[in-house]
Length: 533
Ligand code: HEM
Image (cartoon, rainbow, N blue to C red; front, top):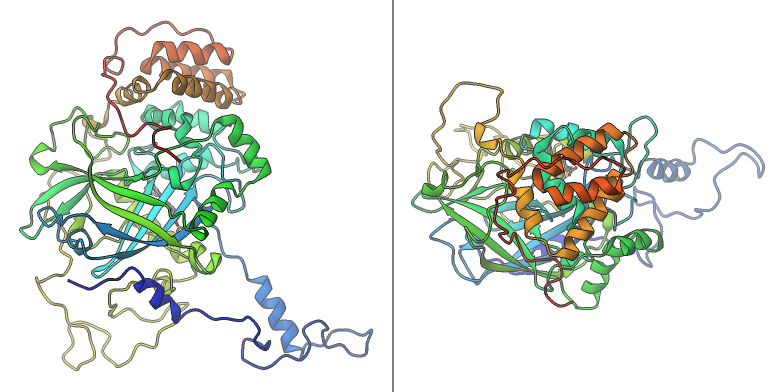
């Protein structure tokens, strides 16, 4: 196994750090500058001269300081730390960082909101990102999750639609707030598959008090693969050691005005003061032969697996212990990708996950200016990197030798070792016709929304009702409000009646017993409010 210490990433970053404090000012070319306050003119009142290379360079560099913000999750805050597994999971996986309890695998975590721009407020009603880059000895593994265990849509081909509906309107960039506008409600009220996630969004989970008190979920079903090629389905859960805590809506709105950096500041200050954020990693293991044991499809990302059916096994701990040195270089330039997996962890055919596999690399080509962003200090693996890729914008290495192809008998290329410890995709059997139709097993859109509703306490329910009234009540179109209430009626009659009464929609007629309503109140995850801060 590769030896990994918790400060290995820190050591690697040391070579990239440049300390400019109290050193003589120079140009980018290292030429000492004698005056940075006055440009070179023809006479004291005359025009500036083109030959003033310091003026040109200084202004040019300023002009190009901005890069595109992330198309989603633009606002984020990051921290370094380490992960340690409690006991070997070798019976499930060959991923070394999950098999050796002596390893401290360095990590970088970025928390984010989804909808707002880079400068937006922290405490808006929104989903939060919880993305973790594990710098393992076998290469980088990125667990790119959210603070809610389900997603709005079942197929990634709908992602541009849901995001366009959630983001400010293209004509006037209004509203910049959370989900309270016509396009969001218009979209979700026509896509019943969104109903479960929308319910989470209307709950207090959408206004976390702190990143330290926020859960995280891998959302999709992934696979673990062991040395014998055995496959276990798995769901990833992060649980904060401090417990899960939210703001209340009144607080969230006021804080957004008074201290828009509320969550960012809390993360920064807690690490600076030594109150280190900690999260336990829990896994739900689903043996291969139980794939079809559930009333829904394991590949459907709008569904959870209730803990009563498959318990969450605590397997390790994440500790965040160091703030980044430079926001742009590290938090802004970090590039997560669900496709970054290590041997022993693999994908499933979840159609949302499959689209994500394309999207992250693709967007980062633009966002980070070319294909060499894995060389950026925050992205650089601790595992050795050797390949035949060449050139492109932002090449910061000097690849040596002449052999950048395979197979190669002239020398200088990187040999491929067949078998051994290289990544091997799980040889899942696939057959069928090419078809643009969703599986029937993805058809139930209400029962888990009902499950969520049934598992809420009275005060949590009242917050959800108030949130629907507040947000849906901002939608100008009465037909859209009504359409949404009709969906709520499929989830729970009392909920639908209560929401309708607050937004001027007629009380819906009961639809009678539905599959959703008959779901038992299984607990979903640790309740908001548990634990001590
Ligand atoms: C960014 C989570 C679905 C495209 C992110 C980030 C997170 C995340 C946490 C922020 C990463 C960071 O901090 O840098 C999720 C989850 C999803 C989901 C949990 C569903 C379960 C999708 C889908 C697509 C997508 C379906 C596209 C088909 C993107 C893009 C970014 C992003 C383009 C910006 C990446 C960058 O510029 O670096 N997502 N996402 N996501 N996501 Fe997703």
